[in-house]
Image (cartoon, rainbow, N blue to C red; front, side, top):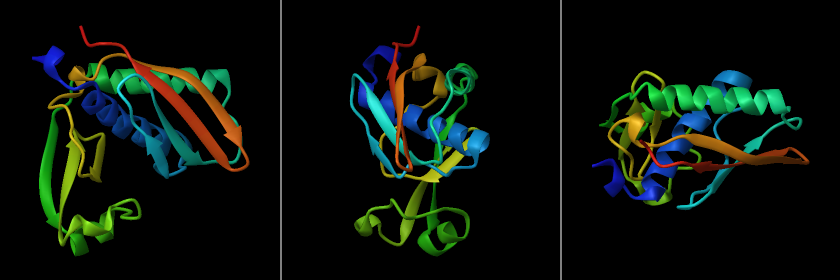
Length: 149
């Protein structure tokens, strides 16, 4: 049941979609730092400027579109050597081992990850950007989730 899903699990799953949206819109890479909490979360990106209000709206629209498409969230296991060919392993913990779990959100996103995730994107809830800031070369996006219907 959707109501029983831990809010941090929903937030973490939303982070995957936000990251892939940033990659697709701005070719900036996934966040280099994230702080995921139950009520609000933030992601930091290497970036060269602040985002416009229109760009923030477009990010929100795209993320919510992926959530609404109710994509399956699945996992597969691959060797670290195989993963190195396709994925940036920079944020992977050192104790990850030689076999990595890759989390796929339909055909939208795939990344090695050790966190907990929803089983379909529709369980995440509505995504809202509450603020963004730019300092030096760091763009920070703060977001919240409304409970799924």
